[in-house]
Length: 115
Length: 110
Image (cartoon, rainbow over all chains, first blue to last red):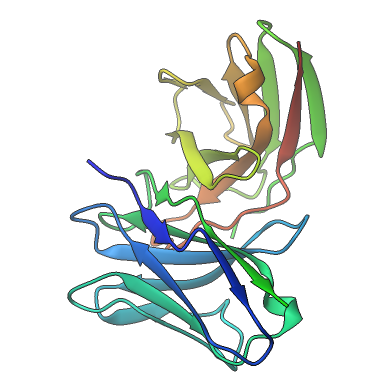
């Protein structure tokens, strides 16, 4: 039973390019969460999706960032026109339903470096 | 969201018990208390959660104060692998996300 799979594990992009981060949740999980962790800082919530719907995007920057979780396939976090400040570790988590009283499973993250 | 207070850092020795405190004085009666940890260069991992009574699992124990304003995560015999940042996270009814604070950075000495 595979856990949350994120790919790529490491991604290098030049300023102005697009970054696509993929997250395959645990099989059967329909809730996906994205977090960002800047170097030497804490985990910040970005967005919560439930199959084809964005439920909470209160932590997403207003521009250049978007997320989707299609009916089929992985969840995608897309960053357009990356800047140096986007360099961070991006973690995805999944759960079978809302989190109260249950465990969320996290992936190993994608480390984005913008050069 | 309920506010939490955790020590920034703690240190312990290998094979000794570790008690990690968390104050969550604004928690309400139906809020669960979840603990996660993040090992170096890894994603967070679930440790344990509870509501009112003490809880045990293979990783740790969670002792919840009678008034629920604080809790303590107990690692019974710390190993070097337990060195991580530990997060105490109250989850309210209808909560849709985990909100991570600064956590407690636990160092284990050999």
